[in-house]
Image (cartoon, rainbow, N blue to C red; front, side, top):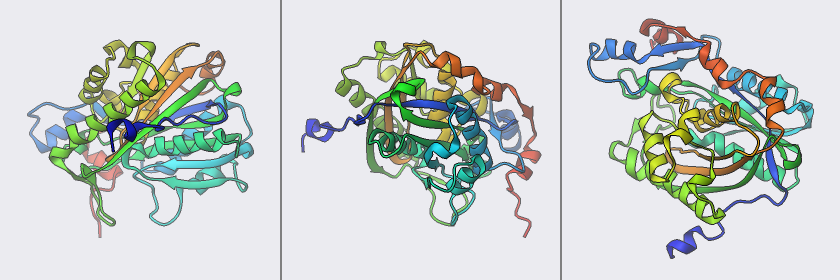
Length: 359
């Protein structure tokens, strides 16, 4: 199979034009400074990959945070929740092993009973998997509106590098007909392979690193491959885009991959949130997009490329419409949630995340 044949017909374009009708982010208020993790595990020595990370409170999980983000998306969309035909939640930290997150969210926002509700998994790109499926559902005219959410309360083994960055938060998107959209999703492209960079078996509490597979064979190969293919197949160049959003496991990776794809630093700055809230995993690319949509203007073009361990990337070509300005202020912005912060120490973090086994 030639390289050309591998990518042939890989561009996903809906039969009916589809766009984002409403969107909403959510980030918990609690913040664990990276310096606190370093104080406990390294005596304060060495650098830290982010400034701080968001931490869910005792009464927060993927369900409660998804409900908050979904309500913000509905406020911007201005539709009746009963008009939704799908409520799909992508996460790698669903509260239940056997009980869907989607049904609880659908019930809480008033979308039941005539709705498809389901949970999606693909590590950090579970949210964009749900987004792609919602795009297809609306694009095939099987539904007028579908809700896709990427949300996580990601875990990290105590003392592990992930403990500095594994954060909480995400975003929700309502996909609908392009003529009603604040941003049209012109096309998407997905690139996957079996790469063992990061994994967690059933009943295993913390995930494992694939070490040498994490960077080049996993993150960089998949994001650059998906991004390049989307650009080539759609006849676009980096300079055609106002903004680019890449999965943000840390501050350095998205900046490097942007350079590899020909993007300038000023094109990715609005979406680079990981230094202040950490890596929100399934919500990382989607919350980066929400931060961009908060400041976008009509005519802006946005490239979004997610990444999920295991491994794969979804790329999207998104074009902002005139409706953006009237809907941005209908719900709290991503920066509003980031600014609403309460610092906590490591002991409080351990209690909130249940890292001490009491029995």
